[in-house]
Length: 169
Image (cartoon, rainbow, N blue to C red; front, side, top):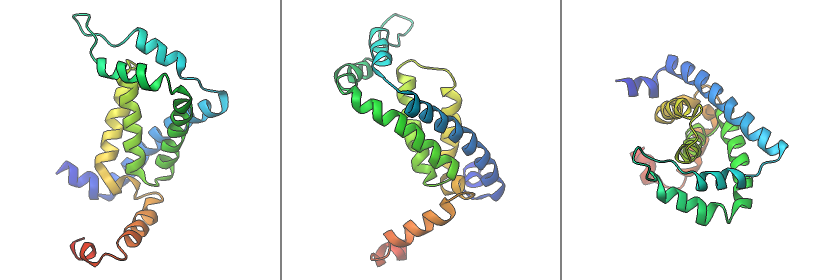
Protein backbone atom coordinates (compact mmCIF):
# COMPACT_ATOMS: atom_id res chain seq x y z
CA UNK A 1 0.00 0.00 0.00
CA UNK A 2 2.71 2.49 0.98
CA UNK A 3 4.88 1.39 -1.92
CA UNK A 4 2.05 1.94 -4.40
CA UNK A 5 1.42 5.37 -2.91
CA UNK A 6 5.11 6.30 -3.19
CA UNK A 7 5.34 5.00 -6.75
CA UNK A 8 2.10 6.39 -8.18
CA UNK A 9 0.59 9.24 -6.14
CA UNK A 10 0.99 12.86 -7.28
CA UNK A 11 1.13 14.14 -3.68
CA UNK A 12 3.92 11.64 -3.04
CA UNK A 13 5.68 13.01 -6.13
CA UNK A 14 5.64 16.46 -4.53
CA UNK A 15 6.98 15.18 -1.22
CA UNK A 16 9.63 13.14 -3.03
CA UNK A 17 10.66 16.25 -4.96
CA UNK A 18 11.33 18.10 -1.70
CA UNK A 19 13.34 15.15 -0.34
CA UNK A 20 15.17 14.83 -3.66
CA UNK A 21 16.10 18.52 -3.70
CA UNK A 22 17.28 18.38 -0.08
CA UNK A 23 19.56 15.40 -0.54
CA UNK A 24 20.60 16.50 -4.04
CA UNK A 25 21.79 19.84 -2.71
CA UNK A 26 23.85 18.03 -0.09
CA UNK A 27 25.51 15.82 -2.74
CA UNK A 28 26.02 18.66 -5.22
CA UNK A 29 27.69 20.98 -2.72
CA UNK A 30 29.91 18.22 -1.31
CA UNK A 31 31.09 17.31 -4.80
CA UNK A 32 31.48 20.94 -5.88
CA UNK A 33 33.68 21.79 -2.87
CA UNK A 34 35.86 18.77 -3.56
CA UNK A 35 36.12 19.59 -7.27
CA UNK A 36 37.01 23.24 -6.73
CA UNK A 37 38.94 23.04 -3.47
CA UNK A 38 41.19 20.14 -4.25
CA UNK A 39 40.55 16.68 -2.90
CA UNK A 40 42.91 13.95 -1.79
CA UNK A 41 41.38 10.78 -0.39
CA UNK A 42 44.72 9.25 0.64
CA UNK A 43 44.64 10.65 4.19
CA UNK A 44 41.09 9.41 4.72
CA UNK A 45 41.93 5.98 3.31
CA UNK A 46 45.05 5.65 5.46
CA UNK A 47 43.02 6.63 8.52
CA UNK A 48 40.32 4.05 7.81
CA UNK A 49 42.93 1.34 7.22
CA UNK A 50 44.76 2.24 10.45
CA UNK A 51 41.58 2.55 12.51
CA UNK A 52 38.87 0.30 11.03
CA UNK A 53 35.37 -0.16 12.40
CA UNK A 54 35.52 -2.56 15.34
CA UNK A 55 32.84 -4.52 17.10
CA UNK A 56 32.28 -4.79 20.86
CA UNK A 57 34.89 -7.55 21.05
CA UNK A 58 37.51 -5.29 19.43
CA UNK A 59 37.64 -7.30 16.22
CA UNK A 60 37.37 -5.68 12.80
CA UNK A 61 33.78 -5.74 11.56
CA UNK A 62 34.38 -5.09 7.86
CA UNK A 63 37.76 -6.69 7.26
CA UNK A 64 36.91 -7.35 3.62
CA UNK A 65 36.26 -3.64 3.10
CA UNK A 66 39.51 -2.63 4.79
CA UNK A 67 41.30 -5.10 2.51
CA UNK A 68 39.62 -3.50 -0.51
CA UNK A 69 40.74 -0.04 0.64
CA UNK A 70 44.26 -1.20 1.44
CA UNK A 71 44.91 -3.27 -1.67
CA UNK A 72 42.83 -1.48 -4.30
CA UNK A 73 41.63 1.99 -3.30
CA UNK A 74 44.85 3.31 -1.75
CA UNK A 75 47.15 2.12 -4.58
CA UNK A 76 44.69 3.67 -7.06
CA UNK A 77 43.94 6.79 -5.04
CA UNK A 78 44.27 9.02 -8.12
CA UNK A 79 41.22 7.30 -9.63
CA UNK A 80 39.27 7.78 -6.39
CA UNK A 81 40.36 11.41 -6.20
CA UNK A 82 38.53 11.87 -9.49
CA UNK A 83 35.48 9.62 -9.19
CA UNK A 84 34.45 10.58 -5.65
CA UNK A 85 34.02 14.35 -6.20
CA UNK A 86 32.71 13.90 -9.73
CA UNK A 87 30.33 11.18 -8.58
CA UNK A 88 29.05 13.30 -5.69
CA UNK A 89 28.51 16.26 -8.01
CA UNK A 90 26.71 14.20 -10.67
CA UNK A 91 24.50 12.45 -8.11
CA UNK A 92 23.51 15.86 -6.74
CA UNK A 93 22.90 17.27 -10.21
CA UNK A 94 20.77 14.29 -11.20
CA UNK A 95 18.70 14.54 -8.04
CA UNK A 96 18.20 18.30 -8.26
CA UNK A 97 17.22 18.16 -11.92
CA UNK A 98 15.18 15.00 -11.45
CA UNK A 99 17.08 13.45 -14.34
CA UNK A 100 17.80 9.70 -14.18
CA UNK A 101 16.73 10.01 -10.57
CA UNK A 102 16.76 6.33 -9.64
CA UNK A 103 20.21 5.83 -11.19
CA UNK A 104 21.56 8.91 -9.40
CA UNK A 105 20.10 7.75 -6.10
CA UNK A 106 21.44 4.22 -6.57
CA UNK A 107 24.97 5.53 -7.00
CA UNK A 108 24.45 7.95 -4.11
CA UNK A 109 23.50 5.02 -1.90
CA UNK A 110 26.55 3.06 -3.07
CA UNK A 111 28.78 5.97 -2.05
CA UNK A 112 26.92 6.41 1.25
CA UNK A 113 27.37 2.73 2.09
CA UNK A 114 31.06 3.01 1.20
CA UNK A 115 31.50 5.91 3.60
CA UNK A 116 29.44 4.10 6.23
CA UNK A 117 31.55 0.91 5.96
CA UNK A 118 34.62 3.11 6.45
CA UNK A 119 33.22 4.23 9.80
CA UNK A 120 31.92 7.67 8.86
CA UNK A 121 28.54 8.20 10.48
CA UNK A 122 27.64 11.91 10.43
CA UNK A 123 24.34 12.40 8.55
CA UNK A 124 24.74 9.17 6.56
CA UNK A 125 21.94 7.19 8.29
CA UNK A 126 19.48 9.97 7.40
CA UNK A 127 20.80 10.08 3.83
CA UNK A 128 20.47 6.29 3.54
CA UNK A 129 16.87 6.42 4.77
CA UNK A 130 15.85 9.26 2.45
CA UNK A 131 17.81 7.71 -0.40
CA UNK A 132 16.07 4.35 0.02
CA UNK A 133 12.67 6.07 -0.10
CA UNK A 134 13.66 7.91 -3.29
CA UNK A 135 15.09 4.76 -4.89
CA UNK A 136 12.06 2.61 -4.03
CA UNK A 137 9.73 5.30 -5.38
CA UNK A 138 11.14 4.82 -8.87
CA UNK A 139 9.86 7.07 -11.63
CA UNK A 140 7.55 9.02 -9.31
CA UNK A 141 10.57 10.51 -7.51
CA UNK A 142 11.57 12.27 -10.74
CA UNK A 143 8.07 12.95 -12.09
CA UNK A 144 8.44 16.63 -11.14
CA UNK A 145 11.71 17.00 -12.99
CA UNK A 146 13.40 16.05 -16.24
CA UNK A 147 12.48 12.37 -15.83
CA UNK A 148 8.98 13.35 -16.97
CA UNK A 149 10.47 13.63 -20.48
CA UNK A 150 13.74 11.69 -20.27
CA UNK A 151 12.33 8.34 -19.08
CA UNK A 152 9.60 8.11 -21.77
CA UNK A 153 12.21 9.06 -24.39
CA UNK A 154 14.59 6.34 -23.17
CA UNK A 155 11.79 3.77 -23.08
CA UNK A 156 10.66 4.72 -26.58
CA UNK A 157 14.21 4.69 -27.97
CA UNK A 158 15.33 1.52 -26.20
CA UNK A 159 12.20 -0.38 -27.15
CA UNK A 160 12.02 0.95 -30.71
CA UNK A 161 13.27 -2.12 -32.53
CA UNK A 162 12.08 -4.81 -30.12
CA UNK A 163 8.38 -5.53 -30.67
CA UNK A 164 8.27 -8.40 -28.18
CA UNK A 165 9.33 -6.08 -25.36
CA UNK A 166 6.79 -3.46 -26.44
CA UNK A 167 3.96 -5.98 -26.28
CA UNK A 168 4.95 -7.10 -22.78
CA UNK A 169 5.56 -3.57 -21.43
